[in-house]
Amino acid sequence: MNHVVAVLAQAGGEPGGLTVAGTVIMAGSILMVLGLASFCMVRILGEKDQPEGHHHSPLDIDRRDTE
Image 1 (cartoon, rainbow, N blue to C red):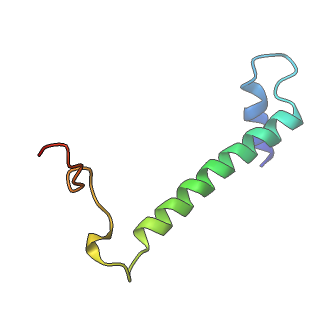
Image 2: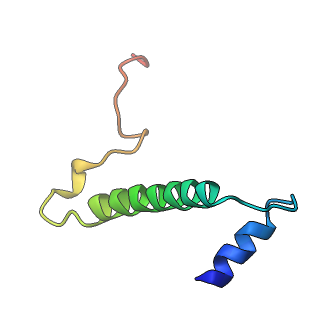
């Protein structure tokens, strides 16, 4: 774990490197994005009791503008 923090600190480009607050904010934002993406994938791909026609592609939706 210390190696990861050292690499992140070198990525700042400044002699001081990345601060602790910057590391925490960056790690938190990455975890939130990964968590939200995982939640969405599990929710969509994990539906077993829904009918197959539940999700529609844009071609299946009748917009009623071609009449």
